[in-house]
Length: 394
Ligand SMILES: NC(=O)c1ccc[n+]([C@@H]2O[C@H](COP(=O)([O-])OP(=O)(O)OC[C@H]3O[C@@H](n4cnc5c(N)ncnc54)[C@H](O)[C@@H]3O)[C@@H](O)[C@H]2O)c1
Ligand SMILES: [Zn+2]
Ligand SMILES: [Zn+2]
Image (cartoon, rainbow, N blue to C red):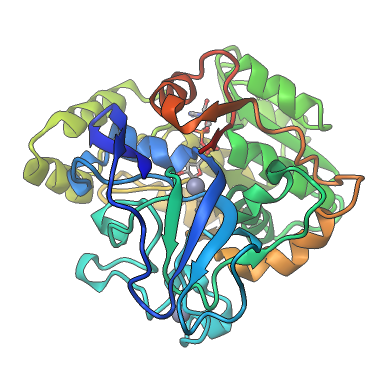
């Protein structure tokens, strides 16, 4: 089968790889009809190469048709149309039974000290072959795959795999009350949908920050107030001014470790991406080469007693952290990988009708073939050609 493989930092290619086959009775094989590229794939593409091997298949936003199931898989059958959560979870362990499927104890990657295995996500998360391919082997298929109805194009349901469930969790963790003002930092797909969901959940005002014109424009189409950090000198000051000096009731940080605006850390991180693996790994894990721009915005713009929901992905641990300010402001911090399955029953009813209350139909900017995936990575990474979200059609 054909698949998009990681070959080195900033380098991916489509190769012929061994076919996906059933290995365990709890597996299923799904033929991909749509499979998206995520901002998390860009962390692998740009900086986390020390955790990947050439030939690793990327991708964790899958949707398709079930081809084959193992003997213990009864909730889906060949021919079903399914979306697959990016976390691989068993559904019956201590964590899963509490809705914490991103921490599944059956698939936890204990050798790396990490939570549940993820599709296409490096050795840190189990080195499971990813979904940017013609076929996907789905472990724990007795629980994971979500059956969706016919009637709408894939793009309506595809984002249950990650973007929608992640954004829903980001908004839930922000503890939004009716009348609140919510600040969303970053307007990639996650920020876009977090902002719309925050409004859907009752926020009176949603203000969002980015610098990419078409991303700001897309948010504007959905009733979001926008700030362009390339032209606003001091974003937290602007947020304070917009909120009568108080700050945002909640902040959703939807950028992660490749934030723009901290040139020294940017250079250090780029350098880490080029180091031999052992050194780079040490740099990422201990020196903390992250860029903190977006987090700093969140810390400074939240009101006293407010909540920060960090959904952007971070590595490293030695960053200077403004503990004194966070403590003095009495801020609540929540974060983590999305527990995809936990939110599906809340979201699915909002997708099946014709009215599209979350505006899901306005997110995808590029539909491309699997063979064009390397070009798609370039467009998405460089934010060229108005690229906000790419869906590959294997
Ligand atoms: N927690 C989870 O389960 C989960 C799931 C999916 C994605 N993510 C993470 O969410 C983050 C966003 O994903 P995405 O697909 O939207 O990515 P993306 O790369 O498309 O979007 C990031 C956006 O942030 C903007 N940005 C950069 N620096 C900024 C700054 N200092 N202030 C404001 N905006 C800034 C960029 O211009 C870009 O539009 C990534 O870190 C991704 O890994 C987390
Ligand atoms: Zn993702
Ligand atoms: Zn589990």
